[in-house]
Image 1 (cartoon, rainbow, N blue to C red):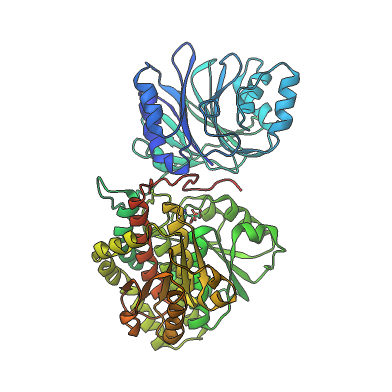
Image 2 (image 1 turned 30 degrees about the vertical axis):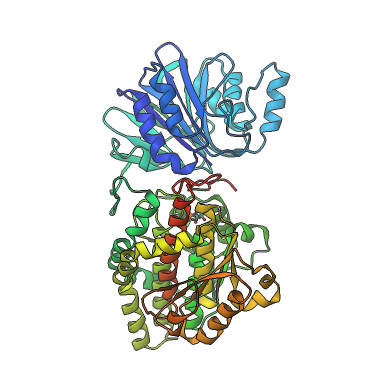
Length: 597
Ligand code: M6R
């Protein structure tokens, strides 16, 4: 999973590529590099580490040219070294390639090339692509590229330049996203639109099996056999909402913008269109997603059980891929994804579709691979999320899933009109109530400082509180590297209680008033064994609980409260990570968008 960018036009390619790579760093930040045609040769500069290492290297070298490609890497094959950084060039520097995806048969191709005298310099699956194109080159770059594509298996988005064509850039897509952008007598390629949207006005999302050739003469589209296809560009609506504070970490800025995205989300929710889609009628529902998106799905399942009295399953997309698929005609699969490009999620969608299921997606990227695969899409309105940790996107997903639940309950008549109206009003107040949590930021920082040196942190809860606890735990481990686990409170005594001792912390999520006694008991169980505890409650007797910290969230229906608890725990994660000196926006080993299986 990486980010790729390419440019051909009249500007200085290096600065365009660096700007694009900055926007793509969320896709991986183990190394980065650029290759530019300088009129005579392909000039390559690449460095392990963050983009600033590449910028520094480029500041001491003159790399001039107006056609080039760039890459930011999340290491899968081969460690994060200069040698394994992209772009890769073929033996005599004739072709340069950047790749996002995985070449699944790279060992066979490497053996094929070695037998023909080619020596490979890296441990990656990507390097073979440059050599293979070179191997097939007999005077026509497009033909060589297409011939090579016939041999490559796996998933790939590629940007390719060659020494033979100083002003031509090629892009290829198979199962990894790639967007073509058109500016003023210039073209660009990028893994997502954000990296090129400042100077491009029209865009084309390449489809699987397409190759694009970009030059001063224009853009030409081909299939993998070199047959011409009609080129299609479309204008793109600008992001509706981009609320970012200068000089503040993205994660913090994104948490602080949750009230605004909830407000916009509520206003823009396409209720009538959704109702028309749901009226089709479905026998059963399944929710699919990964990470935080899956956790948002758990909030939905709880709401469906409580409000619509329907039992809905949520499955982790990668698990769905390995199990017997229990879906078919009449199943509505609700797919949740911020990026709409998560490989496991997309593969799961394809599998569910093959079985005859209908797809409703909740996605933050309008023109993503997921929305293209869906029968109906709801676009969350939280704007671009840059920090690797999902914060505002998770809350927006949960908000839209609750609204789906209400519409479903209303249509099926499972819930009376007054109850639906009451819950709709609760959801309309989410933004305002979350503001009060954001105002208590200082207090949440205090709590985070309390648990920052914990030996382990357990997030405990029941029902909707457990769904929130799972997200709280993921957030904390992801950005602070503290060991954490979410656990159903009632299960503690069946084993995990053995781990409670001094130095261990528990975050007891206890907002559901109907569970007051049980939650109080959980708290006593962990405290009397020496663990420290934070209680998150919503105006109950637990406000006086003998915990180390008590945090009160706004009172709400138990199906809505997980959203508030989650925001509180996002703050815990952020402040604990800061206090531990972690890079909150780019945690180690991770990337924002996981586009490999
Ligand atoms: O783009 P997606 O919502 O499909 O991404 C799913 C997960 O990779 C994502 O939620 C991940 O778990 C976050 N880093 C969690 O903060």
